[in-house]
Length: 134
Image 1: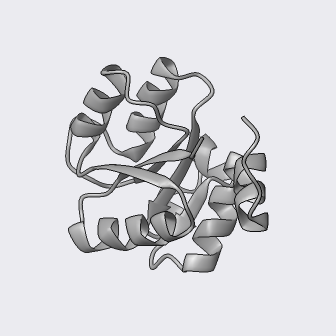
Image 2: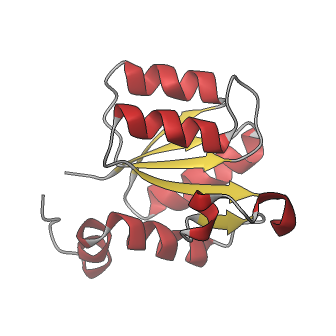
């Protein structure tokens, strides 16, 4: 089974870049351009292994609020935030202190490493070319 990542990013070019990086690594990607669309997908039962979300975006919630609501719906959901904002603006957030944050511009190798850390054995098996353990 392929790990499925929900990419939530309002900038279409950045969303396309993230999707490209992830799909070339073998991940299945679904996307949303704002928090409202992402929550509708999650509430509708869309299977997602990892939520990759921008912090500042349109919709009822920012990336932190989206993650909070998403984890209520899916308690074990892994979350990775991306942002172009300065560290002092977001430094005291618990999700940031956990290390689940990347700076824009996102580097492909760093993104894939971080996603691999969050998804665990699935990503490791894919890098080796073995069948994933489910």
